Length: 592
Image (cartoon, rainbow, N blue to C red; front, side, top):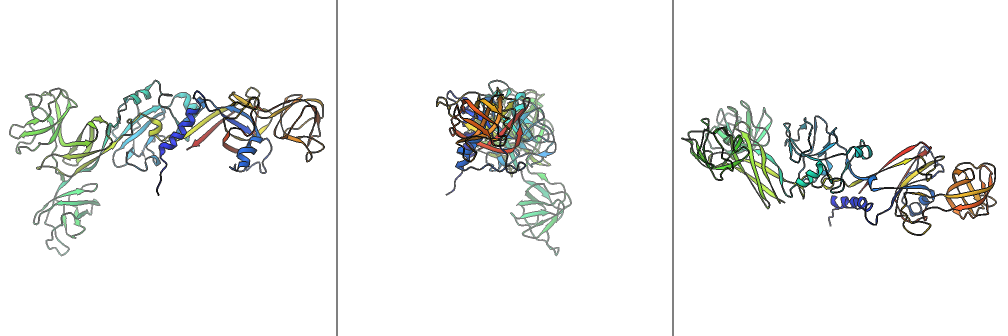
């Protein structure tokens, strides 16, 4: 049986953790430090283990202090991918199984984040940095198309951005105002932003001679076989050929054949030489309208064909400038003598004699949504060079395309529609960029209101969820917690030493209680952790190494009930010496 845990499940778990810190009855999450005693090898701390003895007991015993993590300390993050001149980026595709394994988004030096929607179709390099923060797709002359997703706020650059990760804001929480809010609000569910051209179409190839075999005898090519261009190293499928003819039609797999090269049939083993540059089977023309009767009838420029009635029928005319600019309609009639066209849908703004136009093959979009309109660009030298979206439409979950003109001209071109994510590009950056990691950023500053030692070191830190107060049994929610026990002393003799074992009894081995000395909070007050047994008022303590003694005058218990709550994360490290002016910044990445 095959199973799959989807990325959305991982994101959901990450979102649950982030949201839990802001709920009416929130999760109480703490960063804690611990372990003052030395590792066996101080230069090589051991890996933490997940045994019950450690995760439920030992790490608790070593705990010294804890600081509460606030909602502003937590963000979704993604891997940092800096835009770089000359790098290639993976284009978003709804049917790609490897999208999230590739670099399909970038962050620029302005800390703007963009998603790659098209990479010039050949996975070519990006040479123009995307800029701007508008809601429309950004089309650049290097062939790349980008979608602005969001800008990283200055405070988030400082707190959540490093050389490995960048933050991703939450919809409706971090994006109440600003450009990302505009992007979210303008996103259209099921809109089509990209159509990728997958084939330029068929090409006419004129041959110098009839095909021959190696002996020089005439031998036909075979329709459907693959032809190989020996100079261009190009392959093409043979679409049309008749015996005794020097004109063939082919469908190149990539580049077209070149003039004067030898082409060979891989099945027939026949060969011939290309006479001139192959040209597209499609018709293309452009110019300025010479006369306009109305919104459906107009006359093309004098450069248009004047010998073949109906030549442009089923092609699309697109107005490139002046009146009617940006509108398009399909041609249903063409009179070559007068160069008059009739279109099937009237232009909303009637073009005039200053209106420029292009006529190219028609691109139809079919699917379960509505309103999407596409068009083609090209020329006779290269065929269909690109496919564009004129109207994005909405509510598509699947779509296909057909490129056609009429039975006189053109065939073979193809394109693929790319369906956006649910809600549209830019609606939900966390889901679209697969932000299933959480970065927790916490700063420890000095003694943190006397809860953290500034006289000793520690070797362990971690995350603790929902501990219970030892004082009243409720969930602990204060900003800090002291997990040492404090002893107020009398009758002190000698000087206790940091990190030594303090015990009650005739010897450490026979002690009824013991623990490590963390620090002196006052001249006559000490703190202990990793304690065992009960330190009771009126009893005497002894330092294992110093031999110092004192009487317990008063006992202050730990803030947190030991072994309550859950330790979610633990990390062992080399010792960190704490000082009064020291600031430590912890960045913890949780990946789901």
